[in-house]
Length: 252
Ligand code: ADP
Ligand code: MG
Ligand code: MG
Figure 1: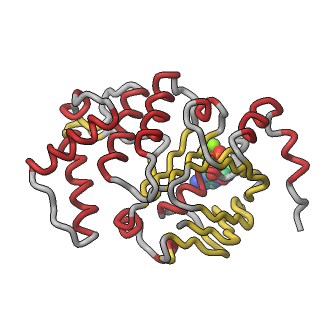
Figure 2: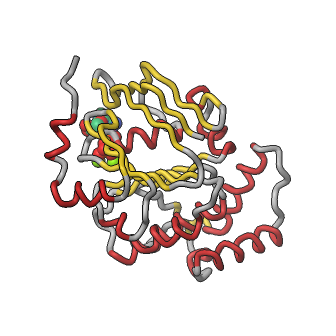
């Protein structure tokens, strides 16, 4: 479903991703772990199509499409969703209105009919039920005055509504309390499906106590240096990232 081959990315004259390769199948939850500054967020941003990076080598193929040749909106239309580390607040803009606009933009880009208010509300109710959420956040302005946990709930709700094929969650964890972590984890668990791929980017093992990833990858020094089962996350928790350093091949 997602194939990343020998990806090299720089910001200015600094090379951040240095030949990263990964091949991921739908129906699975993959965790990307790694030390601070390893390039985890860069990877998520590159897949989603955020600006500011220079791709010097390599390819990213998603469901047969050359992802790097597409605009961010085209990627979203294909079903790529990136939840941001720091959700933006949009004061004065009603959250329901915002979500409906986002969903209809995606449908339009796919050549699908836009949903009218009734159809949209039906979809909203379905998703609230799946996630066991109340509708209280929908009546407020987008993320305005939301607590960390509420922002996470809103983000997961947005994810549910957009029904992505590839959902990338970039979690710093820092600042997230246990309730917020649970919200994210329960959301991911409820939204797992055979045709959906989750890429959960996280610095800490804590989140993975709640989400059971199928595969854990360690990103260090711009490459995937290790992949394994959930036990790899526990090893990292126990030994930190120091022990992984000897696995990083020296610069050529
Ligand atoms: P991670 O998410 O693993 O902590 P990032 O992908 O955010 O790592 O960053 C990788 C490296 O790129 C870091 O050394 C960081 O300082 C650098 N970096 C990230 N964004 C920028 C930027 N806009 N300008 C310059 N350097 C950046
Ligand atoms: Mg960081
Ligand atoms: Mg990061």
